[in-house]
Amino acid sequence: MTIAERVKQKRTDLRLTQAELAKHVGISQQSLQKIEDGRTQNPRKLLNLAKALHCDAEWLLLGTASEVRESASSYTNNNSSSQSLETNLRPIITTQQAAQWPNIAELDERKFDWIETPESTSKSAFWLNVIGDSMMSPSGASVPEGYLILVEPSLTAKNGDLIIAKVAGSKDVTFKKLVIDAGRTYLTPLNPNYRPIEVPNDLTVIGVVTQARILF
Image (cartoon, rainbow, N blue to C red; front, side):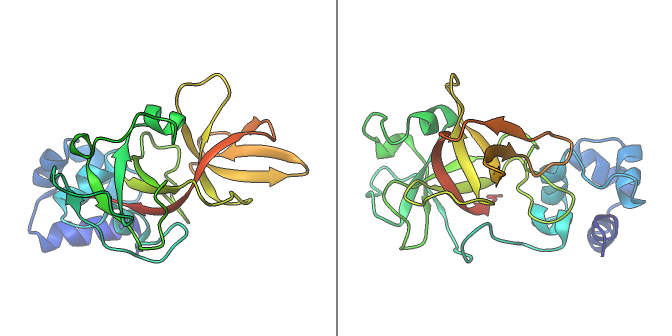
């Protein structure tokens, strides 16, 4: 099945007209029609569309729900101020905090949302929100905007890994695929509309992305 067929099938199952679904998503009926007839393969409001259709965004886009580097692990959002800092609970932090990780002020558990992770996850790991569509691909691995990614600083980045890295002179971090080719290092988006960025070989890698999840 294509994304067009999956959208139409879910809309039909929910007994929604194109106009009704488009209103829920926040797009025009014409835009929805382009998705359903196959002219739009990578909808800009994929998360809104998935929510309106009560399904997973990755399934809607690819027909699968794949992992990045590890096997599946369920998790829950826990805001409780009494939640202790267990090994298998890691915080959702900002990109600015990730750029300083782990050299940031001591974590105040009351100020963060904590997500369950596999028992093997290190105490230095953290969750990060995906911003932008540079890692969203119409085929193969894809991590859409709005997903949560689990970043593991204890792992050594290898060629082909999805990583969080800090580019020299920036106060922020970037989420890209690490590509090492002929002695040169590149940060490569999964979205073909973006170009790879050549970076120094001594690039500061904050951590390797091991999972991608979405919370509805």
